[in-house]
Image (cartoon, rainbow, N blue to C red; front, side, top):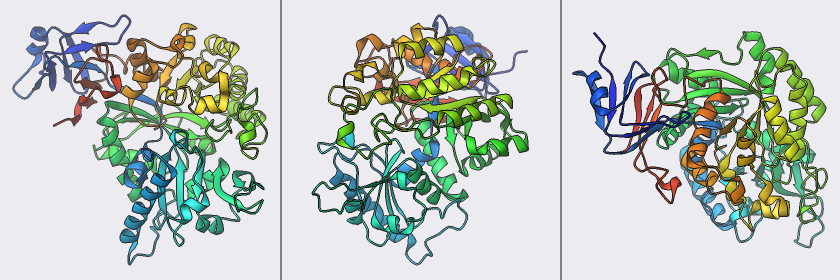
Amino acid sequence: MTAAADLVLTNAEVHTLGSPDETHEAVAVRDGEVVRVGRTFDVELLAGVETRVVDCGGRVVLPGFIDAHTHLPMVGRSIVHADLSEAGSAAEAVELLRERAAEVERETEGGDGGTGDGIGDGGTDWVLGYGYDESRWDESRYLTRDDLDAVSESRPVVAFREDLHTAGVNSVVLDRYADELPDEGVRTAGDDGDGDDAGDPTGVVVEGAVDVLREATEPGREEMTELVRAAQSYATARGVTGVHDMVRGSRAPEVYRDLADAGELALRVRINYWSDHLDALREVGLRTNHGGGSRGDLVTVGAIKTFTDGSFGGRTAKLTEPYADAAADPDAADDETGQWVVAPEELRDLVADADESGYQLTAHAIGDAAVDAVLDAYEETDDPGAARHRVEHVELASDEAIERFADSGVVASVQPNFLKWADEGGLYDARLGERRLRTNRYRDLLDAGVDLAFGSDCMPLGPLLGVDLATDHPNPDQSLTVTEALRAYTSGAAYAGFDEGRLGTVAVGTAADLVVLDESPWETDSIRDVPVSMTVVDGRVVFERD
């Protein structure tokens, strides 16, 4: 006798998102696995006394979204600390930070200002803000020391730009970390008549200097647990069932496994460890695709992650041709074409070392020169396609680079959310000029046969926003269809994590990771606004809208 299902979704429009995309009326789940897909009458035969049967009322059921590039604790930080993403000006960002400063004052009143269990000091007495984007402001400028001194003259204040490659700090931070912040990461005032003496720190820091501050404010285990809980609630409410998290010097891997062991992890987490963890991973015998936790494979070891260049926002992404606005900020980079965060020679050595040890590699590369450098390094390995080596972002890539992706089998892990900067007058226009319309070439990549995985990089986390933007590219020649964009956030992301055939489609034998949408993304003018009704991970309902 066939065992009863745990969950049955009926009266739905179930899209498998396979090839071709087939539609069905119902789906049944048992023991975390899809056991039947088909007509409501046939699927309902698996319902037993204890089966939960949900009438979807015509709603759309899809495979759960997999965010192939995210920083989940950073989502939690925006929730717990000051969320600067909605600030429409520097003044609004400062006001949000003042509100957070008042909260910190209340939280630390009578305390000692430190947790004692963090990698840094936990940032307990710090005033932290995340996610500002000056490119959307009428006065497009970074937050400076003067701005943040107005928040507090006694507590350290840091406002992290959305890309996490640039931050603004107050005088307290500059004084406290004067010996630790690398000179090349601290912007100084020019002789520009603004009242600052030439050579004085402006409070704007980039790249390596930002790393110092991130380490100093890294949460301890208790706070990290709070951040992850908040972030996973945020993610599942947006239909996310799995994330590829980029982790460096963090308690997050420990917390993920703690939550998995307690049965409280509501997402599948693939941890991509920073390159400075490589020796430790080898020492303890953890390799790419190793799982852990009492709930099976909810937590998995992913790739070894590295940088190559910086960001367009900081003018530190490495280009083959100068920035269109290089003269506007002569101290922004080593030269007019950006800078290397990890030099090509160092990158090649790292790739060779990690690949030889059997690890998947994933490298941040935004500018076209950086993309070329990563492909050079990967092509020196035996089989980069079989290893599923990845390039993260690929914001500017040449025709030749796209051909090399296709020929080598390297995965393009991209973030359609970045298209918010691609409109006329936006960040890409300012930084790149006419190259704006040659960014984020999703159609060209897909048509060339490149494996395309979508993620958000938390800018912001939201798959339906990314699908919306990818289907309405500022360059119409690069737009994807709705089905193609959804696949990049499901089966494409699954492939990037060696999970094809198990995740990313709705079929008998696949994991029961599902999302229920109130409206069809194929039949709306605003995909980003489609409400998520339910999210299912490993057969469990982890989000259900009231």
